[in-house]
Image 1 (cartoon, rainbow, N blue to C red):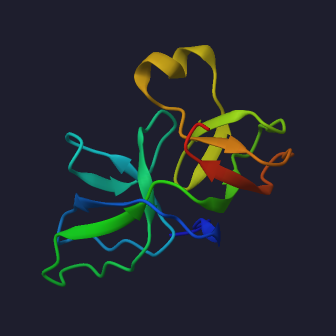
Image 2 (tube, rainbow, N blue to C red):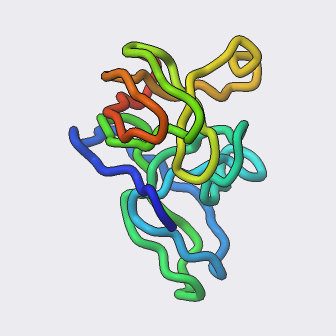
Image 3 (cartoon, rainbow, N blue to C red):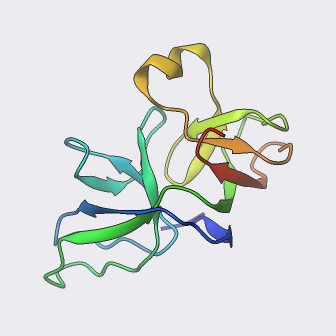
Amino acid sequence: MANEAINLEAPRIVKRYTVLDSVGIAKGTILRLSAGDLYADASSADGDVFAGVAIEEKTANDGITSIGAAVDGVWDIKCNAGVGIALGAMVCLSGANLIRTVVEADFPLGRPFGKALEAASVSEVIRVRLGLN
């Protein structure tokens, strides 16, 4: 995978999610909720609901069916092509390991997951604080 998130300030909250044994997930991959709040896989599309950032490597077909994911901390995350992000804006997923600014329609669907700690131009990597505080 490309554009994995890079940790800048250590997370304090880690959740375990069930994942498919047949799937490989790189450390730093942004995960999405996939069949309820206990299952996750790699983010892949605009509108995915954030589950966390993988804090460990998961090799395909290794017999392991769970992964740890950070749900707080500060991370470098790439902004989607075609959009910029304002300083302090709330962000949501916009593809595989990509973010965009939240719009009003994202709130009732549970998509917002972090705050931009710096402004971003198109395709730029910026600091994002996970959580909405």
